[in-house]
Amino acid sequence: VALCRRYRVRTLWLFGSALGARFDVDRSDVDFLVDFGVITPANKATCYFGLHEGLETILGRRVDLVTVESLHNPYFTASVEATKVPVYAAA
Image (cartoon, rainbow, N blue to C red; front, side):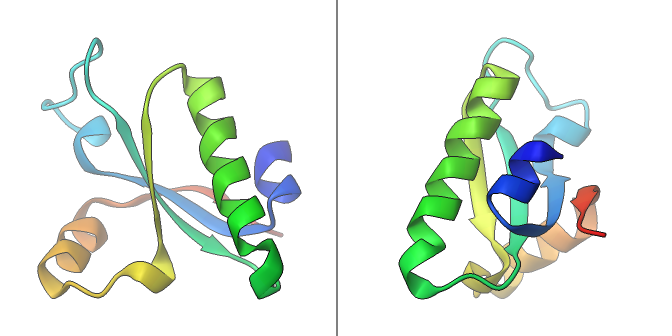
């Protein structure tokens, strides 16, 4: 919660292999989808990379962090939407 608040996360979802039988505890990364709250363009990189590094530190493994605004491929978007589970939502 503190990490999400620090980096102005509006909503954070887990998606992909971490939610199913394909997850390999020794090798798999963890996929997150993030929707940031209102941030200035100058703060976007700080928030994105700060959250990314913080999640990797907490989980002790590689993290793929996808932003809602970067979802353009309809096939990938459908895959994310089909599996995503909320992890954090700002109050």
